[in-house]
Picture (tube, rainbow, N blue to C red):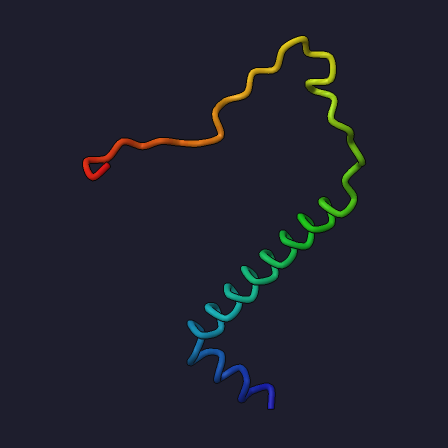
Length: 71
C-alpha cells in the first residue's frame, strides 16, 4: 500500500506541492486572523484623555464639496 502511495506521489508531485502550499497559506491566514481577534478581545479599557485639558479644539468641516462641470 505504501509503495502505491509513493509511486503516485512520484508521478504527481506538482499536485502534492500545490496542495501543501495552499494548506500552509490557509493555516497561516487562519492563525493570523485568530491572533488579531484575540488581541482585540483582550484590549484594555481606555477613557478619552487626549483633549481633556486642551484650551481650544479645532474641528474641520463635516461636508465635502467637489466642483464639477455639471454643477
